Length: 151
Image (tube, rainbow, N blue to C red; front, side):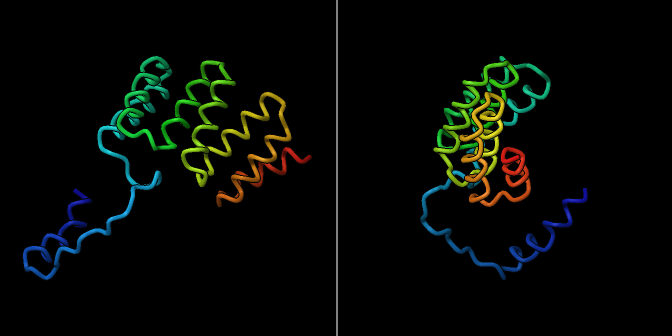
């Protein structure tokens, strides 16, 4: 009900003909743009299954999301979280490293990779990955992690 009022001016403008269609520019889809609907549905289903502790169902849903959107960095980030919960830190690191390759500007992927590096005691890699997260523009979490490792 509260969202309906947001559409009222748009519908009114379209009905009056005061809004003209402007075609979108022909540009390649970036990893940060909105995902295809089927990929997003499977991604959300996988995230919810992960929150409920259903790791097999989460892995299956995220694998399907990957089929529909192989360029998304969000999917391997979530897959890394499944591996971490399952206790396979090396597989988690691999998934997060892949996410940084898919989207080098994903500060979340860099932070997750740095946290995994800390868990296995690789502090030099953790520093480098936290620094990459800072360069990607993710302020306080990356800086806090970097200061933590430097101490």
